[in-house]
Image (cartoon, rainbow, N blue to C red; front, top):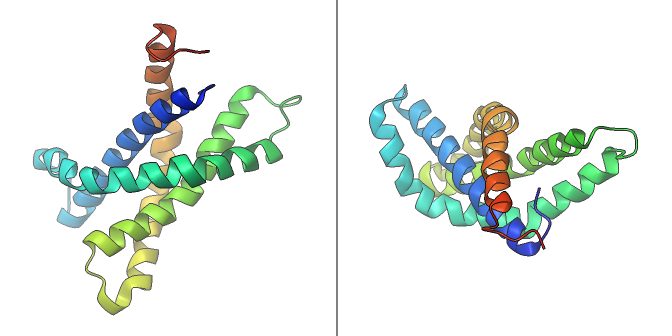
Length: 158
């Protein structure tokens, strides 16, 4: 886990790029009725817009809320430290999924006067994928990569 502001910045960039790209691929696949090779290239076009939005929301707002709430529910004296990781990840998804789904609804869904219904549907469709991707795939992958970067001294631990 990040220990300095620079590490937090690098970790957030890695997490946002990986998570947002995963979710964009998922949403494109939902929209076209399946996952095809071209989805992986098309996702980069949306990543250019959604990546910065997600970074700003996570780095400046959600990460602080998630960390504060996680420390409020996880007793570090009684629980394994990984419980804190799970709590932060779960709370982050609970906040980020509706926020990013709203941004995607506004930017890509052409919802018109049905914006609330389309946003709600988008959030409901995205939440299970976002949660499981974060807990089982993206989160562990990013923590592994980040750990390797810190270990070799690319991002100092001091």
